[in-house]
Image 1 (tube, one colour):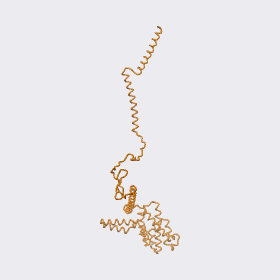
Image 2 (cartoon, helix red, strand yellow):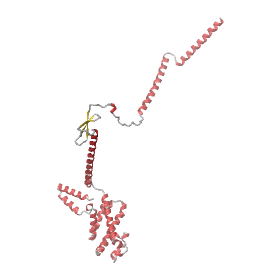
Image 3 (cartoon, helix red, strand yellow):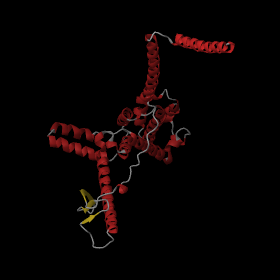
Length: 329
């Protein structure tokens, strides 16, 4: 996050532009006492080592409390063990440096101030013997902390841990201004390259369509019936003015429109039902009209059929009786 320094410069320039002199003084003072060191991990590690080698226990505790309140407490719960392990290792490293510097008073001060806090932690039980041990570098509980490998591993682990947090922590919008500006510039350069390639391809196609004779013609008549012109950058511009040769219907290509899906038309079904109902009603109306006509004429369909049957029987009986009389005569 080295670009934070660039953003600090932009903010300072804006404050000067607005004439906020008191704000500028407060801003410069807070930058000098910035515990995050503009989120530069190497500067933070350097400040921690400075407190350790200067035997400044108060400054070391304040810096770690600041990191804990602004960074570590926002992490997920399973990172708490790693944070606690790093803190205890930094405090042990403070004791090792104080011992190698013959600062026994700083070792006594350390346990006087932090004994109430460390007594409840199991890993510090043996370290309460540290001020009274004559050769702690040879003691099994302290010997590993005197090795350069352990000290280098501690600093590398702390460096990597802080770097990961700084890279993953959410940033304000103004912090993205530089990266977004670089991205926009890169996209503009890519667009320029693509435009030049497109212009070259269009010029090659134009030369192929003209057969390569006559150089660059300023105007040509296409087979589609529209005029083509070359713009200043070499691209082909089509005009809508029709040419002398008109298009025929055979030249028109149909659009590839997919057929519609089968949709059930409820209104069509209702129309069919109404037509069938209307036909049945019409036939029923014709039957009623015929019935009313028969009733109006004084007869009925049943009686009419009965009278017709009687007349036929009379005719048959009459013809038989006349024939029998002819035989007897």
